[in-house]
Length: 382
Ligand code: CP3
Image (tube, rainbow, N blue to C red; front, side):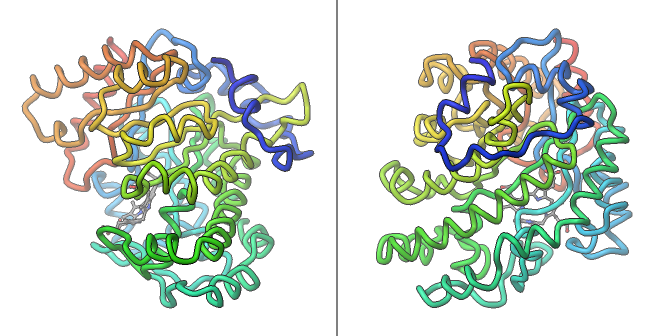
């Protein structure tokens, strides 16, 4: 599959924007065009398997913990110098094939004006949960995408600095998928089964649709800012989609995720000369949703550790580049177990048109960074 036909074929007309990438964007001036990550996401087979790790910028690194000892999480996200430095740390240390922008899925609502914090050991906590039609209407009126766009300068600045330092290594931008963000907003914080969110979805589908559309637009604006400032690919993270049935995902969630992906795929789509920006769609625990997520249109699909990559590829007719999916549990296993697990993932991934090696979810804080460096060496030697 090639990037000029795949995502655009799925674009709703409204997504085809006038905007195009700037002349000094790394995908336009060619800095990252031949990077193994970009080639694999476009369905090609570079000489070595590209590898990066979700949550590579974070608590597994002593140099990260050193910075965070003096600075609260969201302050670090909004300080361009710190956010850029943290983004670069794992690239320097591990030699990964991509940086992932250090930020968080709650940064868009925060910058749009929503009262949210990241509580250590817990996760996102919203001061005022969004549960009724009136709550949703107030959020849509007050915390608008325009307000977010005007507050994104620290993110744009951090991305620009990072991209300059990275040279030929691509930066991956990211955002939370609408369902995951909406689940936190409705619950007010982390929850096991997202029951309140799913109850709202079932009992008031129209309010739910308006909530997801609003959140999708915040995530779209966040991704657009990262891409315009120089990100060469983006990943949409859906941490909680696995709690949904296929039918609910299709009816109540897929359109909003598609809206966000399409916003990125629309950049430059009006111009024959502009390259498109590859997208990765990753939903945790969603082996049952592989066909549904692929149908939304994406350059590549992230797969968690529960579904073998060859099986995922077979179910998709071997049409889509895949990313994943080493079980984070093997990071703590003996070297021989780790090595055979990496070899197994690379062998299964060879069935797909392209493969980006990654974990099946984020790096656990207690991971030994030397093990991550070893995985990069193994991938590059294979
Ligand atoms: O390296 C990277 O991947 C880039 C940075 C990144 C962070 N969060 C930094 C972070 C990314 C991509 C995210 C995404 C994110 N944030 C998701 C989706 C991905 C996933 O893992 O499923 C979700 C659900 C969140 C929400 C969130 N933010 C949680 C659940 C937590 C953990 C809270 C805790 O302390 O256990 C956070 C905080 C957070 N985001 C940290 C980091 C490095 C830890 C903060 C710290 O160092 O104290």
